[in-house]
Length: 329
Image (cartoon, rainbow, N blue to C red; front, side, top):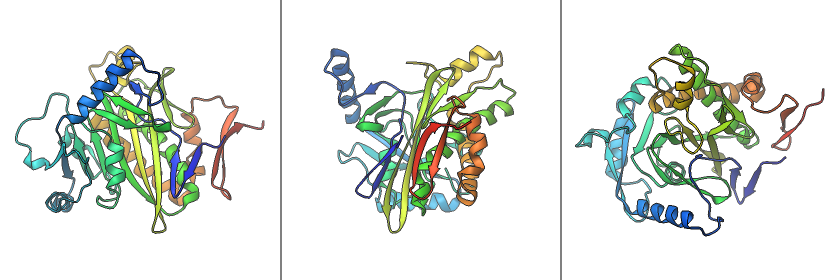
């Protein structure tokens, strides 16, 4: 089954994004849908802030320059203002993403080191894709709330507090392997959760990958991935978006609800820890993927697969196509 389509020079991987309160543009007109749409419109009119922070002194200097030069492409309605973290003049709201906690937990060389955070955004994916040339490769945008998250088939996703909602950037040269990046991303999510469980003496929270890259826990969907790519100057600019239900159990379940059922320990997953662990895993897996190919990760990937062993993924390197098909026994 071919699962990506090419439009002009833009490659869209057919994957879901945030698993929360779908607002489909093709949905029938119902009272509940109308109320949800009205709430979304109201959200879009509220002013918000985009906070910049780097891990190193050089990256913080870049943040200052980015703000000073006013080069970020933001929504045209002017409802989003840009601040440095050092310019925040009041404590953040309860349950806001803790920037310092994330940065102190991060131990990467490239990914996640430049952060754009907002308490409320239309779409983290739009921020990184529209500013691909303005921000460093590996930059991440995080939002506490999304009211117009991007998904497949031009669906819009409304994501309340409690989810880990983020997008980051990649630059790749070999277009034939670009479609495989989504598998590396999904694997890094599952392994990040496994790492946190092992580190904190927790029972296994066994997140599984449903092809192509939905994330399932205990038979219920808890997240997903969106990858988009544009071709420019002999390179593919890839924007990766991830949504994961961490502390918001509706409409299905979330990591902390499941953890409470299987563990008596007083521990809760924190979005900041998950994001830092994700980038640590992804940086490692991405280097393996680029230098050795996806084959070097296949064994670990299939251990996290939700599907029957009778199915596998085939990659036709000469055509750059991905398929799911029955295995020959």
